[in-house]
Image 1 (cartoon, rainbow, N blue to C red):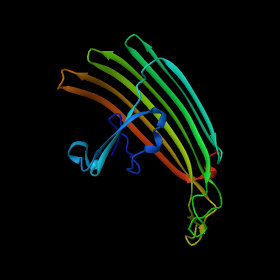
Image 2: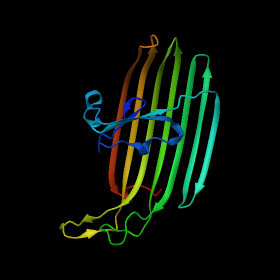
Image 3: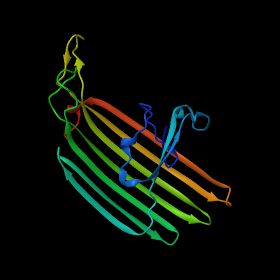
Image 4: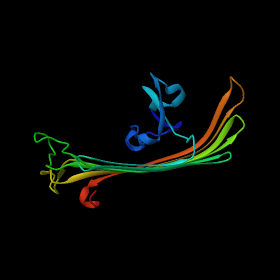
Length: 212
């Protein structure tokens, strides 16, 4: 089971954790519970839980980062943290894409002599209001992943495989939450949160979408 700040982030479509939708620049730490945790977290936690804690922003400031690499790889990040008395606001925007490599070898079915690239675009915002021994917060994030892969299809007679179709997965993930985090004493601490998570995946030949 994958959690992001305590919010379930497993894909509703595939059941797998959407690790690829969380930019590394937003991660503060990762908590791992190994072994069966289904009694507390449900059936998806049968083999363990991974909880990714995102950054809250410690000081005012802005950041911008850009990188280039081989395979037509580009990575751009921009963000800001602003504190006004008891209120902290955080904003992060990123765009990463790569031309990729050929995913399949010639001896595999669905071989297509091309490069299978991807593009990941993310937006994350967070607002936190400090209270005595705790905080009240609200957050929203959206991730859009457009990735290529090789596959094949049958013709109308169901007897011919075409490897010329360059398939894509187009995934859109939205997550929002409101929470209250309060420590009553050295022993008792509680967190109440209300969250919404949505996941939409479309698989289709890439001619449906524009090029990366």
